Length: 107
Image (cartoon, rainbow, N blue to C red; front, side, top):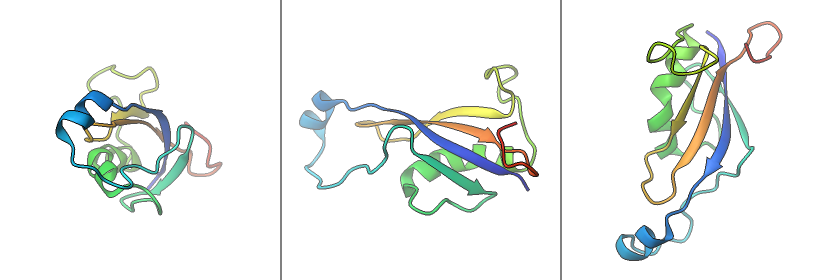
């Protein structure tokens, strides 16, 4: 099974929606742009958000098992995917990339 690199690419925050609909919460998201996680197959990386994992895990599993070319040509790199978490107030976009088994480099 291949490892999958998960990079936090962009964090968005919709303050107007938060003010109108969300109850106050202390700590909504700990992700930082540029942060990198390595998924070892089906295992959620340590420190990775549970809710975000629900959004990306099926794509991580597919890549870890050698799958590629989601949606027939969607991504320039067939062994990658750009997936956002399901937080409607502050979505985070993640780049998922299959890693080479021997060199641990991106394929």
